[in-house]
Amino acid sequence: MKQKKIDKIPARLDFLQSATGLILAVFIMGHILFEASILISNEMMYRVTIMFEGYYFFGEKYPGIISFLAATIGSIFILHAVLAVRKFPASYRDYKIITEHTKRMKHEDSYLWMVQVITGFMMFFIGSVHLYIMLSQPENIGPFASSSRVVDELMGPLYFMLLISVVSHAFIGLYRLALKWGFGEGKNTKVSRARFKLLMKFMIALYIVVGLGSLAKYTYIGMTHDFSDGVKYKSQTIHLEAH
Amino acid sequence: MSQEEKAPRILKISILRFDPHDPDDFPHMETFEVEEAIGMTLFVALNEIREHHDNSLKFDFVCRAGICGSCSMLVNGKPTLACRTLTKKLDAHITLAPLPLFELIGDLSIYTGKWMRGLNERLETWIHNKSNELQVDRLEERMEPALADEIYELDRCVECGCCVAGCGTIQMRENFVGAVGLNKVARYHLDPRDKRTDEEFYEMIGDEDGVFGCMTLLGCEDVCPKDLPLQSKIAYLRRMMLKNAL
Image (cartoon, rainbow over all chains, first blue to last red; front, top):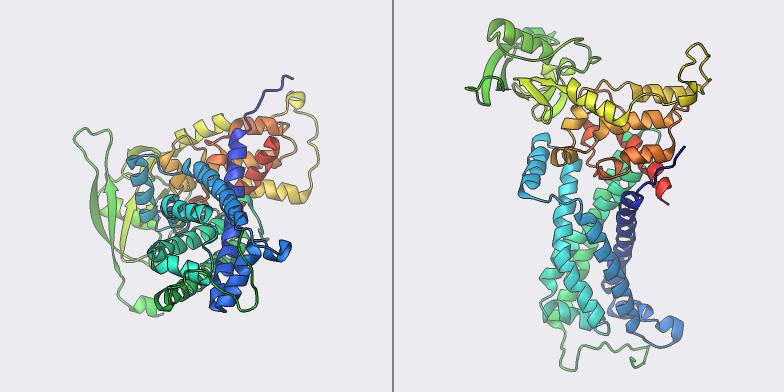
């Protein structure tokens, strides 16, 4: 029998959308926790920063590593956005249909998808701003430099919006991923789904609390610290010069 | 019991009425008042309305037992079977509307059959086995009972159209195959008697009108009156179809 050639692209696009989303979600789970090291102490946050700059591996700091990471995450972010935008309501007609449908049904999971569209759209802009700053100023991360950015450079409100949108988007996305591919499916899928949903809500609440806590601490430092001799943090124990 | 002692509720049933064959008619809501009876379903209430209030009201029923799938409608905005909906589980004010997307015959009556026939033709929902086509007298191959049960479970679909009406994706993109279709494909994909290859299945549903168009809104899963494992089977197909593309 003659074998017809199948178009493999739709399957790959769907898979790539899920895979890039998964990478970004795992990244953000780590990111928010690392950044929360400020809640322990300034020194702790400094050490986490220089760890990512390679200090504990090379004995010296290379902020370029942060740029490289930001560029990598940025590329995945853009790829994910390109793939996900295919599913957006493409016209006012589509938008009206899906919102009316969701409201009429009062259906939670359809509503969650709308949250994904809205938070995803928000992040096109605020996520890009954040990524570009990390890419272009990798050396300005630290207990004082980051605090100065939050307060003096007025990034606080942007980080607030970014936190809310990225946390919701990541955990709703992980929940939807599990259902989309049948991951962790129990014998009774209704029960396993309900558990995933509960876990999702708990994680969103937890990460928002942790994220808001760190943002509050950075804001507090930014408002009370005396920046007259620069934004560089001077560790009591680790002395080095950046490259 | 106390339920009998209490005065029965007066149900206010608002129905979206429209006769597409009457050029002077336009869609409008009409409200009927019905005294609730013990164990009343929407099927009983609608018959009450047709008998005592308005004999022109159009709605479909055959089996009254959730088997034929004729009486699907939007009850307070959610697609479900009217014959299996007890009025006591609803507020006194009930809104009924026909399922969207299907051809409207009039009022609550819709032509799901036409749509479903098109779907079945598109997906060729029958066993494909070229080598065995004309040997009707031959014994069927044996099948593991667990597999037979799994296939039978999916065969319980009554084509009521609730999953289609509950699907946000198909409302936006009418060519999307919907859960009813994907469930059928999963059923034939599982069946070892169907000799269609994975490539052939992929050809049918391996695009954005097929399984990769599904946005996992799970309206289908949540409204299916037969509690079919739609989410799980769509995930199964997604995995199977991805295998073709790796």
